[in-house]
Length: 273
Image (cartoon, rainbow, N blue to C red; front, side, top):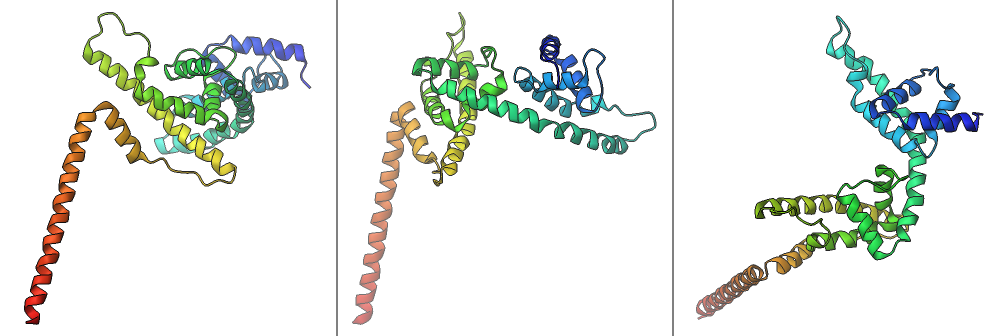
C-alpha cells in the first residue's frame, strides 16, 4: 500500500504540471512506464485520487485524440501500418478509463447533491456561469460540474431554467460592452441561446433517463406547441396573421366540401328521375 505522505507529495507534484506534461505522464503510466520520481504504486494512487481523477480522465481522452502524435510514423512505414500499430495502443488507453470514470461519477453524484441544496438565485448563478464558460469554483472540475448539472437529481430544475434563459436571455447574460452594435448584440444573444439549447438537449435525455429508471415511460416534449408559444411571445402580430390565414383556408375548404356534397346529392336526385 502506498504511503499517504508520498501520495500527497505526488499529487502536489502532478497538480503543478502543465497540461501537456501531465498528459505525457498519464500515458507513460497506463502504458506500463515507470517514473524515477515516484514508485508506480504511489503514482497510481495519486492519479486515482479524487483530486486528480477528473484531470487524469481528461488526459486519457486527450491522448486518444493525439494517438498519431504519440505514435509517429516510422521510417519506411506506411499509413496503414501506422494505423495498425496505433489501434492496440489506443485500446490500451481506453481500457484504462473506467476506474477514473467511476471516481468522476462518484464526484458528480456528490456534487449534484450540493447543487440541489442551493437556493434559486445561487443555483441560477452557478448554471449561468457554466453556460458562459466561466471558471468553475475549486475544487470542482468543469467535467464534474457538467455531469452534476446533467444528473437526474437536478436536470429537471436546470431544464426549467433553460427555458427561461431562451425566452429572456438578457436576464442572464453579462452587460453588453460599451458601444456594442445592434448586429453584434444579436450575434451574442444568438450564441447564448444556441449554447443553452444545446445543453437543454442533454438535459432532456437526462430527465427521460430519470423517469425510465423509476419505471415511468418518458414523455416526449410537444415541440410544435412549444414553438407556437415562443412565436406568439416574440411575434404576436405575425402569429395572429398566420392564424387568420389558416382559419380562412379551413373555412374555404369546408365550404368547398359542402358544395361538393350538394353537387353529389343533386346528381343523385337527377339520376333517380
